[in-house]
Length: 310
Image (cartoon, rainbow, N blue to C red):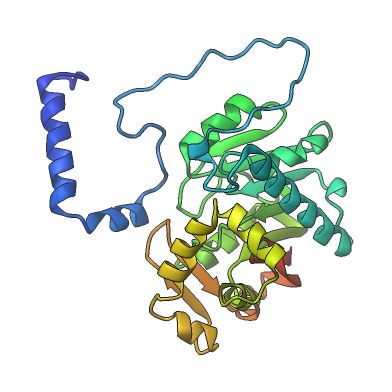
């Protein structure tokens, strides 16, 4: 059997053909993203390696920060990156406590869409007594988490298909920060899959773009909130590019703002932006979930919804 050797003439031909295909079909990118099952680590390389497993030295140091390319534009500095993750977890804990479901009383926790651990790193105080998992379709981010946050936390790369590698009723609490802001057609399927692995009475916390978010996009925010929103998006320039030049001019945005539609998706890929009427989304999940609370601006400009698994 002829093997494709990295660096060989056959390999060079294959690479050249692949990139010429991409240049010839510029519209294929978003469609490929839409059907991709996950984002591979170093996808352009024929092979990659992982470092040797570190030896235990008996001491646990403060975990490092992920490189900038894994931070998804959260913050414009190391301090801001850490602070926004800590604040999001603090707000999550507060909402759970107000629902008489303190996170300390759980045993197994899942972050659905953990990226490079911006939020989950702030749960390590629970790790000695809790089993805490993070999953994501971004293999590079998950590998970074495995190298630097595990142990005590656990991580796995998953796919965009609504299936997670856990048994029924495994978790007491699941949270998803800014995940259902990018999921449109598969929203119901993912809610059902998360319900499968959540125990009866368990809680599911997710953040969404809703009408409260649209009000923020229209300028209804304090100067302090504006500065915080800019920092979370990597600066004011990114905010203007995303909100003013991308979202507010998108077809359907004005109809959503006038409450003429219940859902809006801008773009059709894993990089899409989705906006929901919060009450419509909650009603849509009945009878499998019961909405306990809807909290505007709980996650930057996004609204947090707390569900109970029925």
